[in-house]
Length: 391
View 1 (cartoon, rainbow, N blue to C red):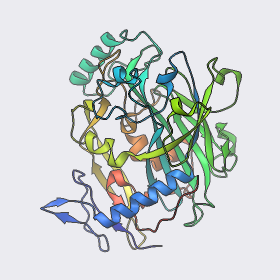
View 2 (view 1 turned 45 degrees about the vertical axis):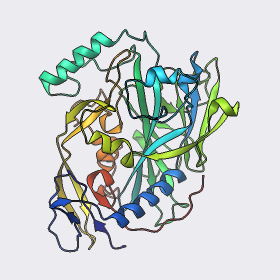
View 3 (view 1 turned 120 degrees about the vertical axis):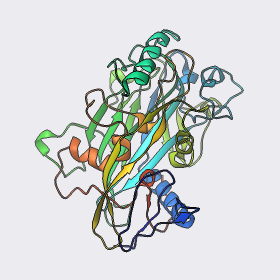
View 4 (view 1 turned 90 degrees about the vertical axis):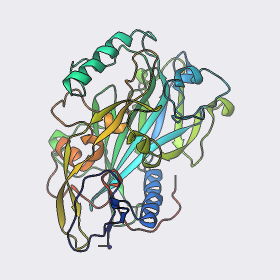
């Protein structure tokens, strides 16, 4: 196994003293080794590109607000002007998908986050009162869903981010031989669980529905208006009257309004370098609400190949985008996603500990490793070389 170096991100309470682990320090604070971090970032993009989903985006009556784009499409990082600016034709809604990659000795875990400036499925300002109740509950109850009402099935709101987790079975270091085996999608605070035909792990009698994949790229459907994501089945229910746009990774961000075609190429944006630094600053123009995360127990792979268990204190992070239209401050980044049927699980576990989550969800055995050799949001980076990714 290749020599691994461990570098800690500022703000993570992770104490390491074991032999062979390299911790970079600067001015008394932990900081990642820049060259190591850069190499990891390049490798992450290669992996994310190789398994990037094909998104079948349904179109509603407000076609423009079903276009997938980036949070700062309007040139700023404010969340409370995205509703208005998305209706301004001067701002182009080019196609971007956010991503994050974690890795164990057996699997890659790739999160993809899909952003829309509007969730317009309900009455535009009808959810404001409920949102205020939820915010007060968070303030006084200290929980992320104290009322049990955070199922926004009938609420429209400014900003909307849903997505998926793609789990890939590794084949050595060659990502061309690796295979997509599990996919989980987010649809309105519920994680939908899928396996692929390539799946050989887990209990075959308890496998959920199948998601199809083309050359290991999962085929996913994004509903119009509310933008919940599920497996694409080419069914009548997934054939909205206004049609579909097919988004696939091309390494460039197309503008759907200028292409006038059903196929749109998207580019990838790393969460770690964009929304994550802003989340760590607390309440700001991007994030309108924060959450104090619980301590996370995870295992890391030491340089000598042995696992090391440690506790990570993630601290207080921005957990809901700033929004003022409809249900305010309700759209969340991936570390704020949760399943209403799993309220006992700590917020953020699905994002920060995808290996542990997938092992639990699919009842997997010891051959499925939950020991991280790469987990940027927990402060561990791999060494590695890169090559041009194929779409």
